[in-house]
Image (cartoon, rainbow, N blue to C red; front, side, top):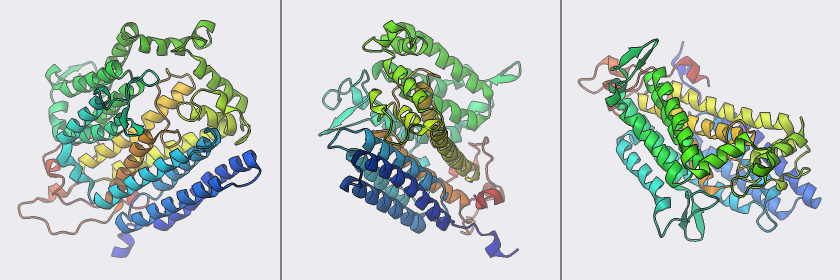
Length: 483
């Protein structure tokens, strides 16, 4: 077999083809809505569609120049989701706005993601900032509580800061910095966390003194719940840590301990803090007349969303044909219900499948990455998006209590859009490293061939990996080459 046969293929042409398809879906959805509202394609339609198309193609060109081996499916998936969100927000926004604010945030977020790809040549550099990421995370979570810059309590939560004429949610960025910290810490301390402990039945439990990271993450999530009154972010942060520590150690005992802390903390919080108790009560007793009409903390939003999705049936009422604006916060918290009404169960399943595909592509990048830090970071970032989708869709469908999180890429909200596009940029760079050719730099004196071996996904934190930014990566697997 020749060297050319073993070289990975960039597959940027495949990405371009998928990107054209994604733009056709999103622009087509916007066209249907514009024609339904005004019987013609107005200036706003052409303005929004052309800007989205140009920004997407610029992003594609940057990938050709800086990350030509990046996953060819991630960008088209995200553009399709973002474009569908823009179309629905254009449909639901008040006259005069028509989704332009969300479009501005989309362009800003894509520009930041492009900057990540352009300047971050190697994701392993982020490992140097493990504890700086922890400090930045703490600062971001404290900012909404600082007088002078805090936007105060909005819709029952204190998660916003005021930056001039606009508000921003620092917790959205904190999930990225926390993922960087968790990946760096766990890849360096995996042996300490994993090896010692006591076996109880089929599971080996860690020593109490080794549970510091778990207890710290739990206290952070409880602090967010108490001081910021943000149930969704609390679940997201702690769930992110549980998944990453399980991936690092392969020990189910950490999941058992984490779930116990979640359930125990949630039970106590529902009894002690009224805002948590009201959320759970409106979930369990949504159709009770007293709970339905209660303000604040009533179940009217949940019930209206359920009836809206029910009216959509299997195929939906059609874009622009339903009445999703009757549901409170139809363009943000409840945008899934809006899509369920107008696209039906089939359309909603298609959106969920797009999210599942996005998660699997991120996880494939983790499997193909040759350093433990990159594996954990890609897993954490992918799971952060997946968990946020589960929490939002589960809340809208009344599977779990409604939390107030927004659906990634679909819902109105600049903070969430910016953070999730940064995640996309990082995943693309990690997948570029995973699928790219082997670095042929001569081995440094004193290095052993073992230092070149790829670490399996659960086995992180070995001696060689602690210098992951200096070791020579191994060749990508055949499966990764052809992704």
